[in-house]
Image 1: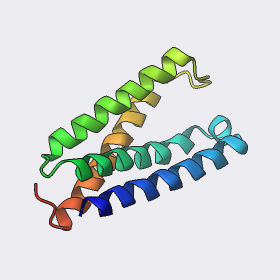
Image 2: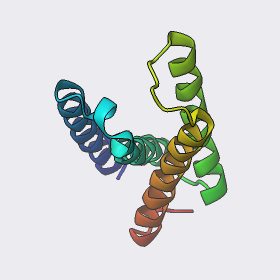
Image 3: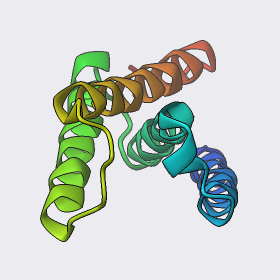
Length: 119
């Protein structure tokens, strides 16, 4: 069963990487502010799928919290490294990014719950 979740996480990561590469090569992140929103959703989904694969039981709040902490760490990393942001609403953009990561995690939880994952 764990292999299924890890496989799903791997496929999600590949899709996310391909979309990210396409967005970078066509400068979509800089032309359209919303483009990173689905990428963050996929990121939250991917992280949650890995967590689901690693643990037999997980409450939804804890799963979303784990993903949110990782997402927050990513946002801090972007700020420290100096990822360019033309957007003046940095707080709003960061909040949406973390929300989308959490929504991806919640989606993974719902899928896991529907598949009779022990919760």
